Image (cartoon, rainbow, N blue to C red):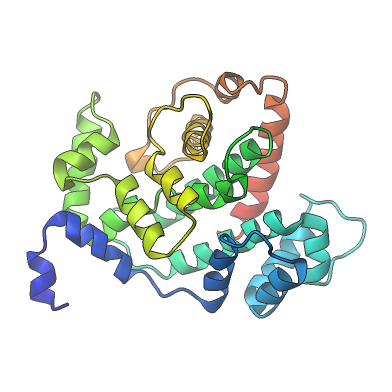
Length: 286
C-alpha cells in the first residue's frame, strides 16, 4: 500500500492495518500459538519448540530456577522444566516471553508506554490463569493467552492512528461519564476489543480466545464464559493498580471483594499470594 493510499484511509481502517506494522512472528512464537489449537500437545513437542530458541530456553530455565518454584537442585534442561511446570504453565511462560520480545521491537508513538502495556498484559494473563484453575469455565487453557493479548487493540490504535489516539485519551480523561470504549467508538467508530478480535482471527487463534477478547468489557452473567473470566481478571488487576496510566479503567472495589463475587472468598488470600509471586517473577523479563 502506498503512503498516499494509507493516508486517505479512514481511521478505523488505519487502526486495522496497524497489524501489518508489528514485527513478524518468530518461528518459535508461531509454533507456540499453533499449540493452542492442539489438544494433544506432548511434553517432547513443546520442549523441542523451546529448545530451538536459545534465548527463550535460557529465560525459561532462569524462571524455573527462581525463588517462585524453590527447587532444591538446579534445573538444567527444558524437558525437566516441563515435568515440573506442566505443559500449560510452560507454554504460558514461553508465550509471554516471546510476545514481549516481539512487542519490544514495535515502533510506538511517544505518548504510548510499552513497558506499562507489557506489565499490564502479563498481570491480567496471570490473574486469568489463576481464576481459570479454580472456576468452571469453557476452554480454561486459553485463559492466559486471552489475558496476555486482550489489550492489543489499544496498541493498534496508538500505532495506526496516533492523532486519533490522542483524541480518544483526551475525551476519556475529560469526560468522567464516558468509558474508554465509548471514547473509541466516538472517535474511531470501533473499539479496541473489536480490533483485537480482528487481529486474533488473522493470527488464527482459537475461536474461544477471539470471543473472550471480543466480550471482555461485558459484565459477566452465569454461566461464566472465558470472556466473563477475562472481565473479572481485568477488574482485579486494575484494583491492584497494574494499569496503563493514560487509559486506566476505574476499578470498583478491592481485589478481595471482587474475588468474593466469584465465590472465591475462601481462596482470595491464596490467589493474591500466587498472583504476586508469579507476576513478580515474570516482570523481571519485561
